Figure (cartoon, rainbow, N blue to C red):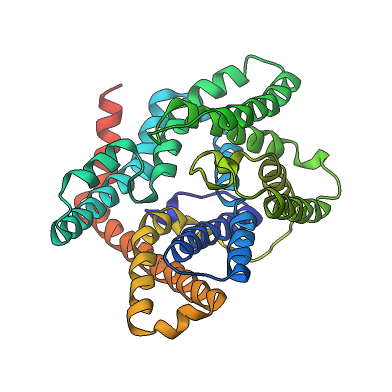
Length: 352
């Protein structure tokens, strides 16, 4: 199932998706390790730098989704798109949310903290760092509507409107706070990245010197690092939702996306790219277990912050990747044995 999520994407964008997934794992490991250790000033600066240079990950995920999904005219059909998306995205999310909830409940009972908190966290969409999935579900809900509107306006209007939307999203995130991940404010803000990704993808041939955009991204990161060093952390750097909408993060994320659009790669990354969705779903527990194991059995490693987070991030990514492969294998067996996809498609067709 996992390797079917992305069928026709170019290798450069497949690679960007893989790198973005690794960056997300690094973000979570870096944040958790920094919170649980008394790091030095140097370690804190390293932590801050990592926090900055990995922030392209979620915006690029969203732009990649917008690039391909909004370019497919068939996705304007509500029933077709919703049925396809639920099978590929919704079912894994339900399965892993249920499994992770069970693990969290067992952990809560063992700690004596009660079983209500994990359920409340799930209802708020903040559970297990799955906020991105709930936000993504909101974006997918809007896809047919966006495509229909796109088809009724001029290309120029659509392009300008997309960047204006992202600008308004930045202002909105600067002035708003949210208690639930599926808030319309969060979903509509990420629509900006969703639209801009599609605009860039459909106009790639008109963008010259794409490689230079890597330099622009690096300059943006450097400026943001200096800015944080002078002014300290703000909501744009620590808030779970608004940190993706810092002006320099928006600029650097778009630059990374454009730069990757110009890379020519012969090797195929489609298989691994197809596993990234389940890797995300799995890694949120895997890296926490690894952090605790290292702290308990190899505490000396925690003294070197860079080595510490590098080991945990790499292992978490590899283990989650293996887990995604196992899931894909088991799901394929179930599909074949019980003809799940065939029965699902028949049910969808009958309900038309």
